[in-house]
Image 1: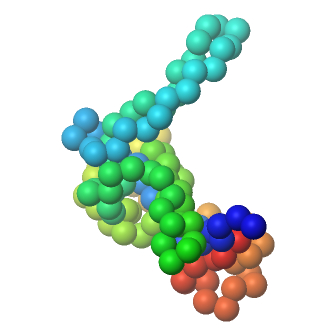
Image 2: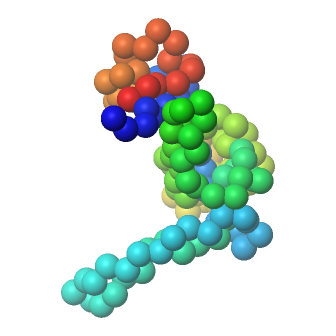
Amino acid sequence: MGVPVEIKCLKNGQVRIHWFVHSEKGPIVTGSVTHITARGPLVLGGVTGYIACQPARKNLTSPIINGHMQPCPCSDDVQAVTCETCAATPEYETQCELLAQALGATKWKNPPAPVQTRDATKMTDPGAVAKV
């Protein structure tokens, strides 16, 4: 039997996705992988940065707390971020303004994504954790 996994969810049942900020000052260095393509090698990852709401976090590994694995879903794309704490940081607001300018919009804000997880609809307290 494997280790149970707990996924942090928002009150609306969405998975909490954190924002990974690219920064040379960050304590996290992601692993890299190389894929061979028709145009030559494509190297993905290998970037330095931090989680916006947890700047002291040193890695993206899934710690096991009280016998449950707790992954840290994150994205470096502000459009994918659902973590309210990450979205409240000044860096996030700056990145949203840059995105709005690039898209030619006056203001851009990440709209909530539709809930697509089957477990979230069956949870009694979706603001806590989803156990899978």
